Length: 602
Image 1 (tube, helix red, strand yellow):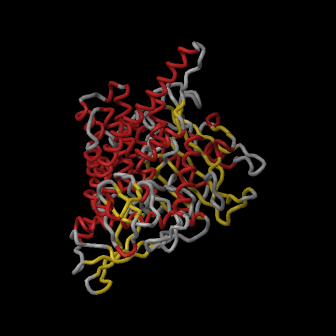
Image 2 (cartoon, one colour):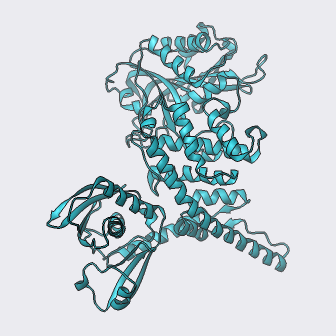
Image 3 (spheres, helix red, strand yellow):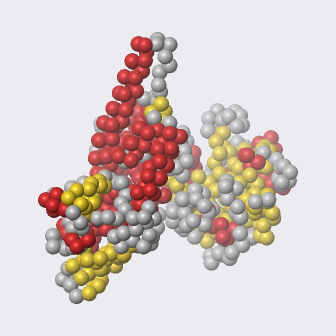
């Protein structure tokens, strides 16, 4: 059967609502910290407390279509079947029905609703081991529903047992996976001609440090991949041929003048740009939306965005294409199902544009350095070959060189590795890690004993906040008045407090302008340069001296590009890119003629 993404979404939800399930909608893509993962990677993940026994406000029968983000196989994105964002169609029983009802509904859905041939369906069940018995019950149930006995296969735990790796206290149990032929349809052979279309997990156990223990309530967790099912029901083998991506691919073809169906590197680039743009807008537009940064989930987002930007360049188009494609996804594909995307559209597109502009500048200078690195390796190989024809050519970029690309030019290690692989080279990751640790140790030594400038500690976080006060001071001068000067500060690991002279409250527009300017300079990843000089030299070079009485004949100065130049004795980071995202949380009066800003780095 042919089916659109909107039709598939409706059929899944309506079917399970007809069986007494409540549509609970999708929750945030961003992990809340309770499951030990950064993003939701499975439809059931947000439901863990309820699968473990907590009553759900919507009842015991639930269904939804849940967005997920998975980047563990990001290097595979570019083929026909891998995505970083995908959706899972799910339904759950929280201690209500179990195997008998669920097997019957799955067969009904696949055959009566989706029109699949029951004689072609294959299914696998758990073969059993020392921890749990063979799942004969499920096998007998599916056979009683008309699945051919020779199409029921018993497989080991690696195939038919579901649990979240690396976690404890989470529900788990045997699963019943469903397969359908994707080729040789008249005489398909399992598993060669089949593809998995979904699974029913029977959560009978809780994972513990010692093994498994029975759950108080038996649960059912069903997961069918939305993108994969859409592909499959339309008789396609390329996930980028569905209506989810049709508009994005068509726009990329128009912009590049190349055809997706011609294949090759152009098709791979289109897939990567389309996939990564979709994931980007979903993460920025999420209810708990994030922004690109150098830490945590923000770092993953930055890596995704910068990979897409690089492939825009490879395709010969501007990175502004990401904004155009994001708009297509928002309006033509996901706006109705994720209305928050429509509300946040302007914000999403502005943030994509900002990151693209930052990385374009970084990429231009960084690529030159990368090419110099490769040229150095080539010169060495050529020289050594002349000396010794049996010399084995160097094919590894040194860890210190990779760290320089990261520290000075903002290249994530993964980007350097990807660029290297395209040239038949690898990167000394252990050497990179060693250079990174050496850098951290130097930073700690530098900061040790320098708890000055209003810092309550000289921790790494407080050091970042102190550096941010320099950017804030310069931004206030640029936005409000050159006469604004720091009147005091107080910094902890949680926030910064900054006092400055100004005769009135700041407007909302002024607050946003200051935030944007500080974040712009953070995004430029500017070096923070330390120099000692005479007080006269510092004044001649227009360094700002906030408290002149503190300085002697020789002063310490810190400049951040051409944006900020201050005399200061406190600890500082080496580059602004590590600061994260700057946000003003409060602006208020401190005393007559003095305003106070409280701000955080996120």
